[in-house]
Length: 164
Image 1 (cartoon, rainbow, N blue to C red):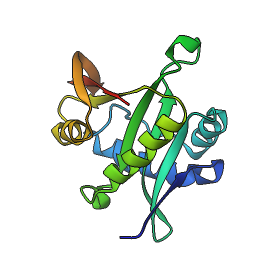
Image 2 (image 1 turned 90 degrees about the horizontal axis):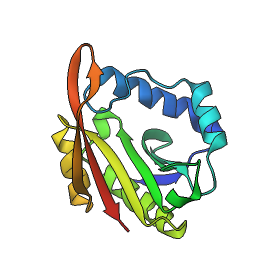
Image 3 (image 1 turned 135 degrees about the vertical axis):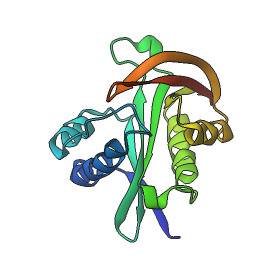
Image 4 (image 1 turned 90 degrees about the vertical axis):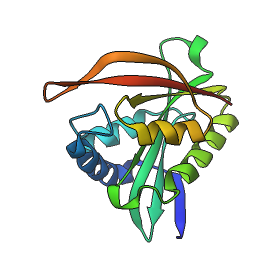
């Protein structure tokens, strides 16, 4: 598999939005239930600092997934050492090592940009994602009970962290 990982630009907004549409429609892997539009993605990417990014997994010129890294908070610099990560892979490309390669890339980027810790929220019912992050070294730190409500059904969010 010839995987190319690179930082997204505003020109990648449509591809990212397309992935959101697929993953949001599944209603099981993310708490996000309304996909971001291409315009919303363009605005988001344009507003990211140099220390943040969306990293794309591309195979044969097709974007098959992405991983985001955002600052925990922008209203104070006391959280500048903490990032928030999210991983989103199209169904046909899951469990092929793409997430791990994206994570290595994102974690390396985080280290180079002075992050000391990365945080992730994972839906309580998403055991595969929890195991994925545990394999990367993330440690479960808590549960936010009934944090997600989709179609009248509740799910917890698992709070995990990784010290770099």
